[in-house]
Structure formats: structure tokens, C-alpha cells
Amino acid sequence: MDPSHTEATDGTAHGVTEGLPVGALVVDVARMKLGRLMGHEGPRLRLRPPAGGREWEADPDRVRLAHGDEILRASVAEVSHAAPGRTP
Image 1 (cartoon, one colour):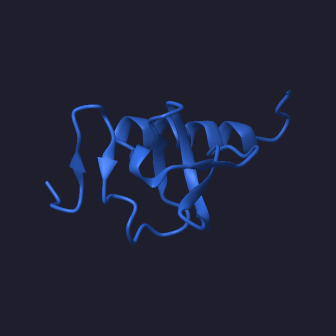
Image 2: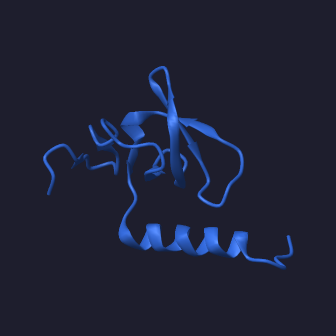
């Protein structure tokens, strides 16, 4: 395990957001939402749903990297959202 990624017993991840590139997939554990890192706003992170939508702010101490299955789900959602002939 990467020493910069230590998970607390409450499911939060400490130090994991340092150095993350814009576009990284993360989970806001406070809201249990998957989001793409859009940037930093002061001490907070700006996240957006992977398939698009409204941004929200998250506490960096309550964000963890997305796991493989979460990344796969996000990829499928993004492709489905962009598919021609998609109905809302």
C-alpha cells in the first residue's frame, strides 16, 4: 500500500488528495458520491459527477481514491451518457 494513502477506520482517507491530478476519480465518503477532481477551492476540493453534472465541494479529509470497480462503473456511465441517440 502507498504510505501516502492511509485509510482511517471510518472510511476516510488521509493525505490521499495531495498531488492528485485534475481529472482523478475519487469518492466523497461524506456524501458517498463518486466524483472527478476538477480543482481546489481554498482548502476544499471541487468534484463533479463522472458523466457530468453539477460540481460540489468536498473536504479533502473525507475523500479517497476510487477503487477499480468504481472506476469501471464511472467509465460505463460516461460512455452511456455520450452515446448517440441517448434519451434522457
